[in-house]
Image 1 (cartoon, rainbow, N blue to C red):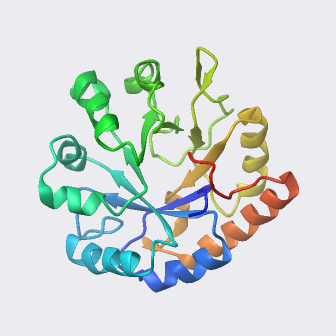
Image 2: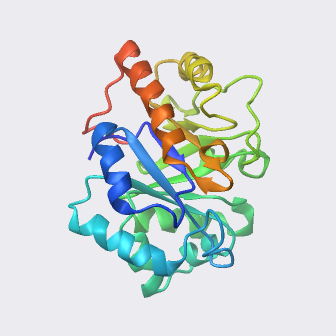
Image 3: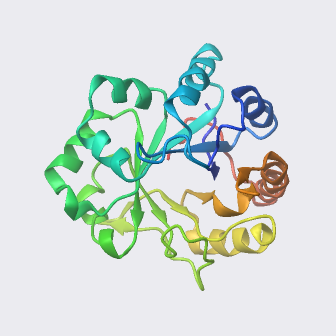
Length: 244
């Protein structure tokens, strides 16, 4: 697998696995984010389990040459921390899992146990006011990563970007989100790169990938073309064994 650099989130039921595979072959640094919420499943940008089952089967049959991530929302977070066998069968397919939550609702013991339970998966938490000190408790886990999104998923471009988090000279892999899209990816990527201070990072976007609230692969391809040019200009390598 290629290290993901650009996560495109909100893949919906209008999209097939074969379409994502075709784009991934051209842009192997892309990761496709799939939102999961039991109460929203089957609506808009939240695929149903009926769609997800054949999609994940195609993913397995293909030998996992496509990067996919699960983004947990609402009761999906509860299912993750109190998982049953059915839910574990779903999560088993994803290389990275983003947990959208306020950690004090669940407690550190439960969260730490999740990192120990899934050592082969990167588990991502959001950095916001509700989780502002969480990284100080989890940085020792090699599969811990943080996403900066000051807008809280509202698609607002930040006035500035934060440098990656560090604890005791331990650099935490960090991602950047907030209002990224076709209209600003060139400018914002340069600003993010400067803020990264030569640490590994990735970018994530969602809201501006849709047309009439449908996941738009043309927009995705245009963004990835710009990202590819940027990676080449900066000589950023996205090949294993680097892991974030």
